[in-house]
Length: 288
Image (cartoon, rainbow, N blue to C red; front, side):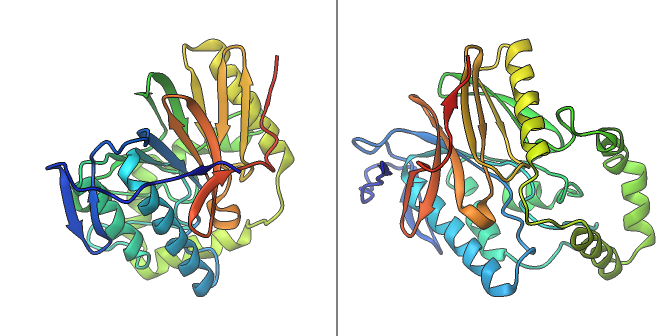
């Protein structure tokens, strides 16, 4: 298994920061290639407290390990199992992760948060307090010489069905404002938690996986993208086609997987104890 090694940080660059997670530098370390990390489906708030805390700790450890070479971070949706932000109230919990994100942005590392179907109801907290750009649908960025389309994946593909029609309604400012205005925060979050549990499934949805793969293939065929990055299926995939590459980040909360991109191209990785290693068990392949 190939490991992403991050050498001890030699602080020889003026662009450095000291915080509660230690000292870090944005210097270009010998032998370390700048990379972008994509992580999705952490679903913080889904599991019992100890499991959630372990997931949060592992993600902070993973990103902190990669930080000397980290060029950008993309949160590709469903970071929270349920999230309803009010004007003066935000959901409690996972402040360690949020503090770490703020430290990344304070240190000059951009973080983009593409919301998913579980966590779309953000206002301005992540932007104002953490310096994170929150994106409601998708983003198209130039990264390491590649043109990259990034979205969570909900509402995409032939299997999206009725949800594709409901998605813009559920995210429209009028019903969202009514929900926040009519329901107190405790009740609003309580309903969100109940709804999440009602439709929760631990099994892999093969139709969803195939549908997202089809959506990615269509995007690559119809647009000048080099790479399409999605989440939502909870199944990590890396598929090369003539038109480009499709990567699904998989599911952090159950598999500890992420996607990375550097000048060599995309790869799937799994966090194992203290290192990011290749996802050898994932069926990465080429489709002609």
